[in-house]
Length: 336
Image (tube, rainbow, N blue to C red; front, top):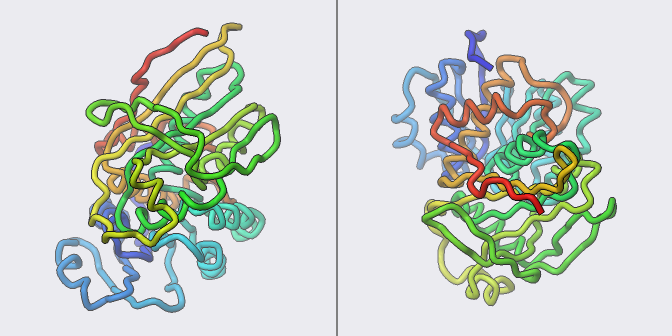
């Protein structure tokens, strides 16, 4: 999907944390955006960052009513994304949400009718996991005649807000799809040793309130099991029910996402593992920026949907590779 010239356009990025700033940098450099509106809790602290953005008009706004924009990127902490998306649709804006909170994701998917009526896109979970994880699952699943199981494992966070959300997710009930039914399972249980690409290596992963199964269930309605787990240390598990004992890191550091797909190909029971290793904030920023840019170009479907629901994820993965985010089948194929 090649970039083409577009009319003068305005994008609002609501949220100026680590990921929001990565999105803003890519949009400013895209050549597609003339006006960039940045929503920040403390606008007075944005001067240094704004000076880094060239060839685009910048406006910084405080929390309040959403501005008129062609695309609104919701990069603020999880919670309240559904209400903001409704407001943005009412303003005639496409919406890109990076939230991975279950309540946000479920609410955003329910906006499908409103988005279709307005002929606008609401792209749900356009981040690292969900987001890149859904693209990889869709791409890997297309290689099967029948997908029976999809298992997502992730490690790493994209910044302070992401770390806080994951901290909360470790205390909430997880959801997994089993034989066509949703099952609630306790978070912090279900230990599984998962091998991530080097240099991250093997990590213990546990259940948590992650949104990937909800989004992937629409992509793989025939799958018997869909699960998601997150890497955690003993300290993470012991302190999950307490307030965070130390301030989150400015950036979460290197992370990874791993998708294991089991099913039938050529009448043979097959397992394939596909994944990526990168800074989650960088991957999330790239995914959201592509979603915003292609919304401007008018090449995305209307309605509320996730990246795993796309007919062809390959153009997204190719564009991500152009931006330095590379995925690979890193455990090969195994027949069982």
